[in-house]
Image (cartoon, rainbow, N blue to C red; front, side, top):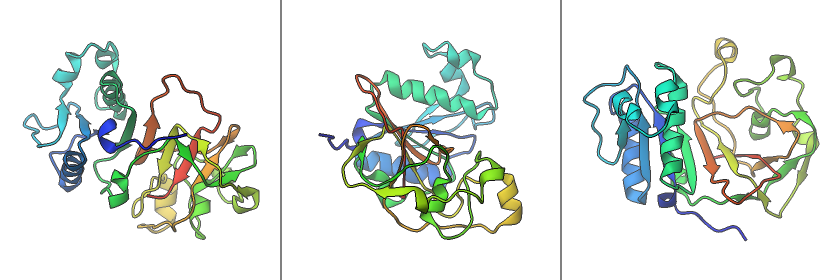
Length: 235
């Protein structure tokens, strides 16, 4: 039986070159309120004077003093420095990692307990699946989705409702307002964009959909294996 993980059992990871902005302040305040660790990974453009109560900020110099070889190998001025934050969280034995961006305000549900199991509608089709299409009647697709398939994926016809829980060690939440779409979509279609509420969408093996870092939970994989790898959950 899957248990609830309190937010304080995990770690929240963000990378940013911004001074403490309203989103970072909201994330720090929420982390303090729920007892969780908030890790911000900086880069060469990050302000030297970064200070934010409730936030554990790692400047580039502090990153280089860590025990991770990767910290000195990782490119500067690169979003991949966020991986250093994951390593810090793993080293602290976090039961899960939640990641988001410094421009996505958390909703109240963002701070909810986490579970490794998800009950929802399961896709029964192999290949690419536009998971965004399940949460709206309008046209939209996630960044990284093959453009030649963006209009041809019919999610609803491939679904089977399920009520029993499936193990899902990667759970992608949606982001209203400014979801993660590519430059082509931004040039052709209007934003902001809000999704409709729906049951979770479970993608089994051999069903693929890109996922992003706006609202994603990764569970610890110690002593565990997973058949179902990704679920999209509206937060």
